[in-house]
Image 1 (tube, protein in one colour):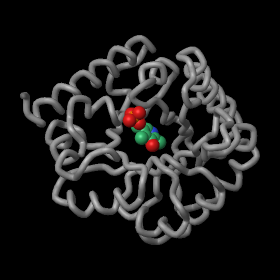
Image 2: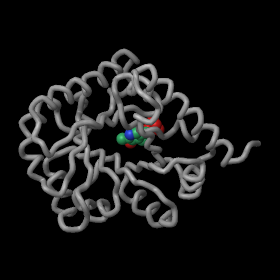
Image 3: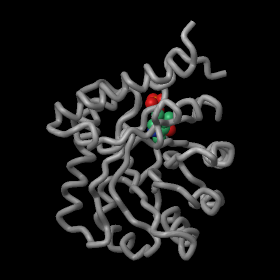
Image 4: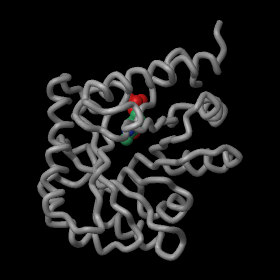
Length: 236
Ligand SMILES: *Cc1c(COP(=O)(O)O)cnc(C)c1O
């Protein structure tokens, strides 16, 4: 049996190769796409092993898990990304030493995050989460509402908006999935034409284990990959 560290290094190498190949297909370089390793399925020990294997940017979708691991792994150099829905009563504890909030999914949340961040740290990088598929189960802004909110969002002086985030339609075919990603990029391009100076829209956080290559081909700059990194590893 090959050991945990070897298996993680091998999985990571495979994912990095696939990211690089997809980036080249989209006319970009491997370093134009950041891998956010989603560690929600695994313990702190396995997470630490992944950091040793060379992953420094980690994502969690549940605040409690983020808090626990941030504490347990405080001795490691990790950049934490919050990628899942954040309830407003958990904002305060989450935003300190966060690298980026991907799941800016409502005005109420953005305002709460702005308030919690104000005076405590430099501007917090956030992404506007878009419900591109329109599924009722998904969080995020309806695409057509964002243009009219940009002016208001630009007034949140403790946030630094960097781009958009989405998830593709659940269970969709590769063609439909690609169209979801293409729609996010097109939306970003449209919003850019009439965007307040303080809002940047360069980042596109899209793509998970099942679809990150499609996402990169459609312009993703951040991919959030979980299960592909932990194949062959017992997570219980
Ligand atoms: C879990 C999760 C991911 C990673 O999913 P995998 O399919 O395991 O790669 C990405 N983004 C979000 C928002 C998630 O909750």
